[in-house]
Image (cartoon, rainbow, N blue to C red; front, side, top):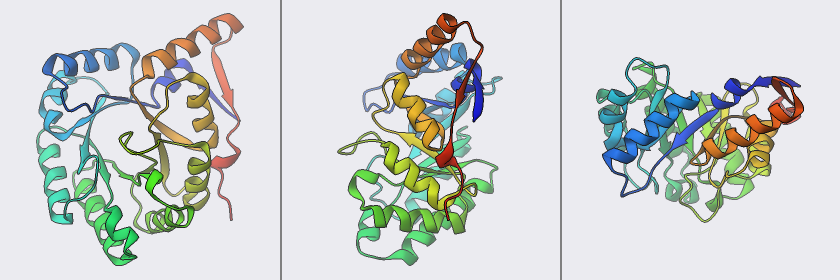
Length: 245
């Protein structure tokens, strides 16, 4: 059982706006909201890195750039360059989408090389790297394969989804991913997380970060529950956060 304050729960949230038509005003709003709620990160398309890093300067809120988003269908060199460009422009977290085609082709050497090069590029700049699997297109065996590679390569997080696929995060997928990586790599749940109960279920399943655009609504519901119960913390049982042999 792990106890979370409201601020602890806020710090699990990657506050997200990855819309193609997001304006500078939308980014200002996103960053203002992240400041107000003390979210961990704003998740944005890489082209917005410089603006958001400027808007969040002097805070402990990270600027998280999405790389090769949302399809992952670019070369390793392109992904590395995009990540390096985003970091040069102020991004201090990176979420990249794997090359699903090469995974489907059974080219595991490519998948390991891609992950290794992306992690190395991020860690050279002391920036966390998150690997987006896009589980809606993968079988359980493929999810386990990618998680096994991650356990060896050691990105900071493996992540369920972009939110742009045919479906998003599921509790079963988070449990499966966590069962493979254990405490070696953290899990980020993202895609379709829109209410407080789903948020808490993902944390209970082993997620240490939640990517969503509904973070404010979720936190407001949790805040109201704490006030109603006249308590300061939420206790969450995380049996699936333990290593499963």
